[in-house]
Every structure is written in C-alpha cells, then in structure tokens.
Amino acid sequence: MDNSSTYVPPKVWTPNSDPAGRFAKINRPVAGPTHVKELPVGRHPFQLYSLGTPNGVKVTVLLEELLEAGHAGAEYDAWLINISEGQQFSTGFTDVNPNSKIPALVDRSGSDPVRIFESGAIMMYLAEKFNAFLPPSGEARAECLSWLFWQVGSAPFLGGGFGHFYAYAPTKIEYAIDRYAMEVKRQMDVLDRRLAETQYVAGDTYTIADMAIWPWYGTMAKGQLYEAGEFLQVHEYTNVLRWTNEIAQRPAVKRGRMVNRVFGDPASQLHERHDASDFETKTQDKLSTPE
Image (cartoon, rainbow, N blue to C red; front, top):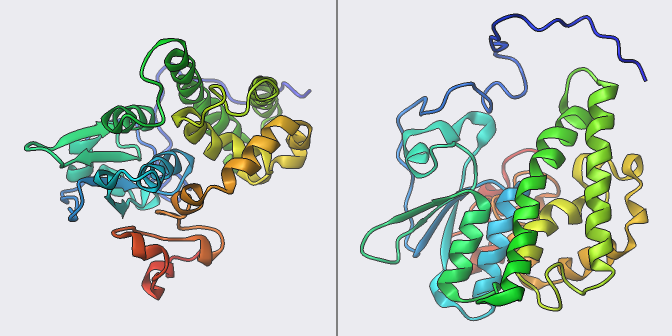
C-alpha cells in the first residue's frame, strides 16, 4: 500500500471553492437557503420532495407498498428535487428539512401540516400512522427498528465513504478505498449471515427494515451501485442475492424505484408522480432529463 501523501492539513481549513467541481452545488460548509423559492403543493395528503437515490427510493417504495396494501390515505405527490442544481437549498425546502437533504415529506392530512425529514424518521412516521410494516410492540418491533437504524448508520460508509472515494473522487486514494471497502464488505457479510437465518431482515415478515436496506444493499449485491460488483465480489453474498431478487419482484417496489428517478433506462424513470396512473401514462416531458 502506498501511504505517501504531499498534502499537509493547514491550521485552518477552508473549502475548495472551484465552481466547476462535480459537487459544487451539493456540498457547502454552512446551512440555510441560497435562494427564495416555495415548494409546489399537490392535491394528495402527502407531499414528497425527493430524488430517486437509494434514500429517496426507501420512502417511495414504502408509500407504494402502503397503497398496494389498501391504505388509500397514503396517496402522495412526489416532486423532483434536483440536488445537482442546488434545489435542496431553496427557502421552501429548508423550511421542511433544515439539513437540506432528500427526501423530505409534508403530511397535509390534518388541520396543520407536519414536516418529517430524514428517511428513517419518514419511514417510522408512515409505518406508525398506518399501522403497517412495523410490528406494534415487543421483540419483533425491537428487531425491526434495530435493522432500520443499522441501515441508517451504515449508509454514510456505503455512500459517502466507499461510493465517493471509489466512484467519484478525482484522485483515487488507495488507503481511503481500502478503508471503506473493508467496512462495506463487513456490512454485506452481516446482512448475508442474517438472511441465512430468516426470510426477511427482521424475521419472517416483510417490514420497513427491508424497504430501507434494499435500495442500498440490494443494488450493491446486483453490482449496480457504483458499478463495484466485481471489485467487491458481491456474488459471494448468496443470501443477500436471494433476498434482493425476491423483493425486486414486488409490484410496489418496481413502482417505487421509478419515482423521481432521472438516470438509467428512460423506461425506468418517472420524474414526478401525482397519480397512480402516471406509471402507465408517462409523457415525453417526464423522460426528458438525459442520463
């Protein structure tokens, strides 16, 4: 391993302000809005502001599963937030999520709107509201929440750590990639060992834990996330692959992963979702964003 480096941290850190950088409109060292713009509001009880990244897919899969299960009150409008254009820094979005990250949800089913941000919090809120996909008490509930928060805690390693240094960093740093690859493979092994014992992550019942973990570790197991399948030898995790393929066949999951998606096959994209019929009547303007 080459541990040499010419970089010496300064006494006081200052951000690289290169406006041409890939993440120039995504990352900044301060909070708060950069521009004034209100969020649109549709006609349904839930207003989702998101993007079809793994964290966004977690919520749209849950909403579609709730509708599939007959919870009509879970109808929602899904508005696209283009984070590469800095739309998450509008006054409207930061009012809903002061952390300026997708997804963000507003529940308008009651007399006063309720904002919910952070994907895990959104999933708990919806599951409790509809008494679905989350055991009500006891050991089963504890197991489900443990795995839900396992995913929430592991995502920064998988996405912000491994994904950044392996796929996006302008300079490939062996130490950084090795550090995060080691942790990602450990996490994959944790999940694989668990799924050798149970059909679903929290036991024999499909829950929000599966919906939270699948967009991250399912796509990783299929070699689709960061195109790192061969590098990480994901074919070794046979139990994760079994679980991944089973969940991928669920109709609600197929729909949920399309919502707010702006990359990949145009046929897999539904940039905004305002009605269940949108999945069958996608128009060309919804497919206009290039890959």
